[in-house]
Length: 328
Image (cartoon, rainbow, N blue to C red):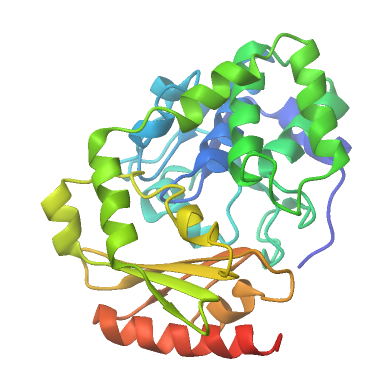
């Protein structure tokens, strides 16, 4: 990982830019979209022309975020931007092929992230692996550099911070995290309303998906590992939409004996997307995912394995069990 640049250096690049293109990672979660929108809205208030891109669009459960209707799902065309900003994206390819193509004209790239595996692929990089969410970094950058922050920006950054801290449950949450939220509350943020929109708007199909998970999940390592195989047939039967699995893994992780939970999701191309979580600091799921070309955080990581799904699950679970049994 390259050495970080300062907020001042990044702020100068932003102030000198005329037209900014910003994007986050494929299959966006709350931190990806909240950070992207919070940043984009601030730059617009600062007088910049801004193109905000999401390679996979906006999932239904985050469509309520202020400014979500301004996000563009790129089609491969090149945007007229002179500066690109990547947010919450550990490697450049995670932006997605269409977003990368759309930003190709940018003369320089700013990389703002919190994944420790980020190699520093930007011309300017700010990577803080201790930050629980990129939304926290964006807030600090905007405050430090005097960029505008209004209620819509606060709501997006709260969504980013709340979702990536597991509603402030994860060990990565710090006093500074709570101080940011407190400051936003003093400036008018309604956290109860935001929490309701984020966590209490589940459609019935998502309830069906949860029922299936609870019926089908399996355990190993004396109940310390919970796993669920999620094939295309289940998606078709329930009629799932992008974003329906968000947070489901936490239902497995919440079981008292479980220290690590994992979902194996079959993609249309036959590859298997692995999503892993840990609630024991001694169990590093990022290291396990790295064995299969993936990565992420110590307590939340992912990887992609070739199918078939049963074979991928067996290979990954063997490696995960080895990691869990190191704590014996």
